[in-house]
Length: 312
Image 1 (cartoon, rainbow, N blue to C red):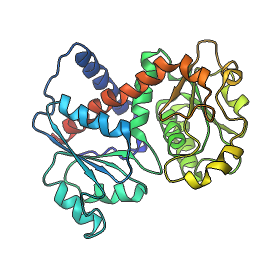
Image 2 (cartoon, rainbow, N blue to C red):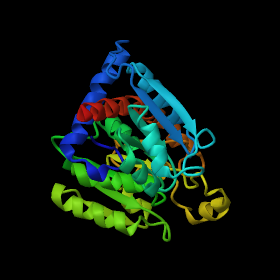
Image 3 (cartoon, rainbow, N blue to C red):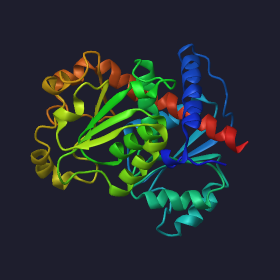
């Protein structure tokens, strides 16, 4: 049995298997062919942290695969309140076939997975957001910005906060062997432990990961530019300070003009125009961004099918 807690636990071949499944299932979905890959399977969706895209994509995804999604908020279950988290894991995993958790501390999902009898999927933690990176990878492939056979031909730039998205991009680049340039303001750098892990993995794959405090250096001559909100859920009280500290980090025409002429811009959403991205750039790349959003659905279907195949 395999869990999907973060990309460190997966190699290039396994990631490709998941993406290949996603591509196949997406083609079938577009042709209105809904094969019951997970017929009668139950997916428990535990949300300690709310989300539009995660809720809709997982619930629609498991339904399209022939299964059923059970939405469980922290108000609905005794998750670590009335009973130990490990006991909740033991109970729920005896009643369902898959569990997706979107929470805060990464240690919570690790503890749940330790005691779970079924595969556990990380829908987001403060440390990383691996399902989003599967969708991002699928999008890069579709827009011809990544090829598993020639990963070093791709260079991406991540501009913004050194957060769970940045960590996930670092691990993906290191695992697959593409190049990544990161720009964060001083004081908002990536976690040092994640940095060490990513750089060690990069040595094996040949990936080149560079970290700067200057966006213009990071985006120069890249194929893909990525950003995320400057103020994540739970950081609302820091909003004014963060807006000031991130001055110069908006992805606008000036910055995008430094990337390759055919470069694409991606955003995991929600996007705040006038802050991390300008209105013009967002609308210019809206087709890419909303395909990326839709790909949460297809990438996660590929992931769920793959996990069940490993369990069987």
